[in-house]
Length: 231
Ligand SMILES: O=C(O)c1cc(=O)[nH]c(=O)n1[C@@H]1O[C@H](COP(=O)(O)O)[C@@H](O)[C@H]1O
Image: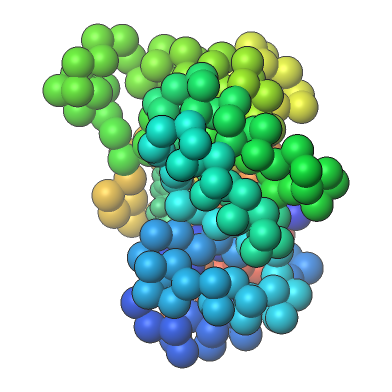
């Protein structure tokens, strides 16, 4: 487990509301994640405002395109000084290698580069509709092997696969796990979920947690409770 494993997913269409939430959180307790909705609405200015508040940022844009385009996109993320960014592993080995090489000039200032395997909203049935005839866990393992071969730092996966993946790919290969739900909290659209302590026990390095914190009546209390449950 990282010494600061919680990443709060900010999925807002209103910048003022998002900044109000951020101002209630403590950068010593968590990092933040900005994804497609907020980056499309508010762009690099939002990233700068978050950095000004001393939070490290995971820029979750899940790039998936031809290698040249993804390499340039990942370098653009590095220019913004983000802590972590990601691509889809299903973009393939050449795409991931190009992305990884694009970060070499940034040395130890480069963001961690992570590949999304099978989204936590996907069930085995849904994978079948895409022509994937193995289980989600098997498909994750395949994509994780490609990701490691490409030299990336780790993957996004469900915590349900974490123990199998740690055993297979080793302790240095980072596991970033969304689909986290404290006991008794609504699953929403997530299918493959675990509680925060279960996810850490299974080998997750970072927990991506959105609505259980952002929609809580008291977000700092929700964050603090999760933080305390991991101590
Ligand atoms: O890459 C991600 O962060 C991600 C991958 C995945 O497989 N599943 C997944 O839910 N996510 C993100 O994790 C966050 C989960 O938010 P909550 O479901 O509200 O906790 C969202 O911002 C999703 O975009």
